[in-house]
Image (spheres, rainbow, N blue to C red):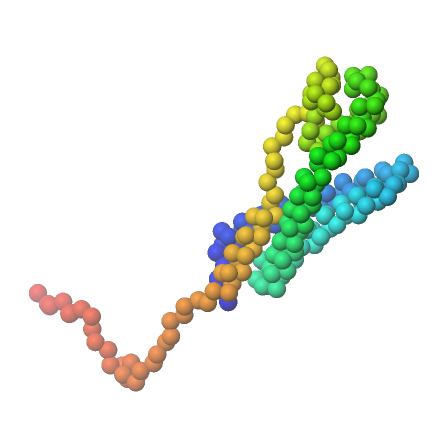
Length: 214
């Protein structure tokens, strides 16, 4: 088993720990939302499906992070392989989900526009309606219904502000984990020690001439 670079190992542990912290926070938010909705008795099929998805997206990465950290600290290749495969599958699932959401975005936008335009100007809409529309704007990354931010008049919400795309730390952790596995599979070149009868008999030659007495 090869020796893993210390900097690479520490970088992987840092990124994996960051993923674990984010997963723990997401799990806490999911538990809080579940308890709040249970107290309000506002459970619909869409809500139950969303909660299940949130539990899956928080528990599975947290479980894989624990296994990955165990594999990095104890130099267990099976744990690192399990972490790598699991995080790749999660990344692919998120990529496919985002692709489907982007493909359905024009249809959802037209449906929301036809539904919300029946209410009238957004400046005269109720607070419940504007809050739901603001949440839809955040999910779809859009603003307004017909004329963009001008539909809101002088009360433009923060969801109309453009947000930069956030990078996913899962991909970085996969790369670091694969690098650790490659270094573990690399064999160290250990020089062979050969014993000869001449060395055992004490037949040595001096490398330097002794200094002459002056």
